[in-house]
Length: 380
Ligand SMILES: *[C@@H]1O[C@H](CO)[C@@H](O)[C@H](O)[C@H]1NC(C)=O
Ligand SMILES: *[C@@H]1O[C@H](CO)[C@@H](O)[C@H](O)[C@H]1NC(C)=O
Ligand SMILES: *[C@@H]1O[C@H](CO)[C@@H](O)[C@H](O)[C@H]1NC(C)=O
Ligand SMILES: *[C@@H]1O[C@H](CO)[C@@H](O)[C@H](O)[C@H]1NC(C)=O
Ligand SMILES: *[C@@H]1O[C@H](CO)[C@@H](O)[C@H](O)[C@H]1NC(C)=O
Ligand SMILES: *[C@@H]1O[C@H](CO)[C@@H](O)[C@H](O)[C@H]1NC(C)=O
Image (cartoon, rainbow, N blue to C red):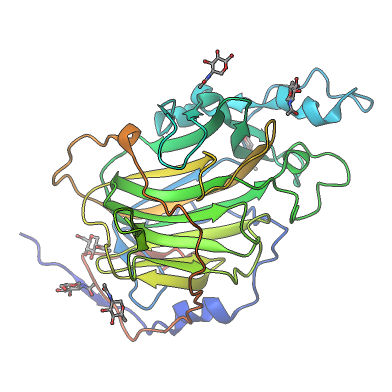
């Protein structure tokens, strides 16, 4: 057996410095590659007070997907707000389908959710980027129809993620913003995204093994919900203490491009927005191998609120990045169709929190000759 090589990494001030540097411009997506593909990386390190060390890495870039030409793409097209739809490609018809599966399960009304919802693979597609020419984005869509809500969920086929640092560059959009209607393309679209939808990014094994972040379009645009599930006790109608945090001071609204990051570590889940630490939860940290998933939905319940008939909300995603470990312990099939999220019947105000990043001292890394630092984008 080979003896693990131990490397004493330099002080973490390197990591902490990323928080004091100038914030990324919120409207201009960074098109630079993340980790250069030629970098030989034996392991991946992420910034933070309890820095994670991971052995695997994946990057899904949705910014350069070839789209069909739009036949109606003329200057005087009759309805420019519909022209963009001819220029889309379904996720389920792209090569990404080998790693991300667009869901089609549905859920009836229950408890206080007054509208049934049905996921459709047609609600996950590639479309032109709303701001950058010759660039694409992955779009999830939810639409309130007269008698049900058409929703979107994509799940990783890989189901053995066991702790990870997941990063998703995304924004929520109205129909005008996603379709690039002139005059709306450069704005953050604040207060134009229809209310009543919930967008989620999460790891999932079961209702009691999940870390997530959620945006409610009924909330003010700088509010985000972070949780280890379950964070709500439906029997006693109480939030479970310490399972979740609501942050009302996101540095940029969810209607602008932000890199959301969730670190699922051994003893805590820690969330960041554009490299600024937002929240940390040590209660209920997932302890079993999981999938990664993103969704956008509405069910007329008190969690999402009501969405008006014929309205749509869109979630644009430029890329998904994950540094991760795997485990095959207890890897029974994951039944997402049975997912049943307990949600409060009444929205409550909870304390918001802004945590400062606390630099750690030193990190010891075993068996890793060539670490790559995700948050410095450098190879050592
Ligand atoms: C990931 O796996 C490596 C190698 O087994 C281990 O040293 C490291 O602590 C793991 N990371 C986390 C966050 O559990
Ligand atoms: C985008 O993809 C095409 C092939 O599909 C490739 O020729 C081109 O170099 C890519 N552009 C960038 C910026 O990666
Ligand atoms: C919605 O209405 C249509 C047309 O009346 C019907 O075919 C469909 O089954 C209904 N869907 C649901 C979920 O009730
Ligand atoms: C919640 O956190 C507080 C402060 O850290 C602690 O005193 C309390 O015991 C925790 N409650 C639960 C249920 O873990
Ligand atoms: C996590 O907690 C366990 C037991 O509470 C402890 O043995 C372990 O050292 C902790 N891991 C880290 C990375 O802090
Ligand atoms: C929804 O759109 C359909 C088709 O465009 C239209 O017939 C219907 O009147 C609209 N309903 C509402 C409530 O706007």
